[in-house]
Length: 106
Image 1: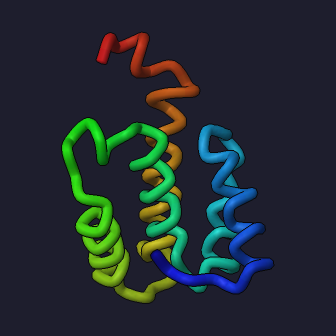
Image 2: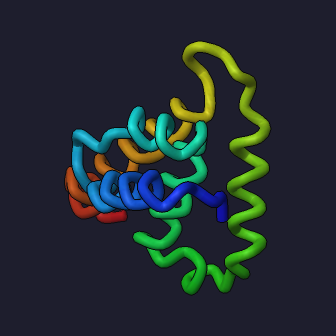
């Protein structure tokens, strides 16, 4: 996993702890995780939804997969990896805490 200085890691983990909140702060994750908002958000959601176990995924392969997706984003002002992490988290919010999963009987 991407290494962070201890203070930054603690801060990023405190933000990630709010992954189920409408006001999840993807900007802070991007700033403190060395432009890794997509990586940390995706990894947190993989853990939250138990994807590694459910789909029998090797954690190292999943980490490499997420890292490659983030690396494929171009550095532009809007459609960048932070936007990808933000969209991913808000879709999670709409499905789970927001109730769409139950309403749509998914």
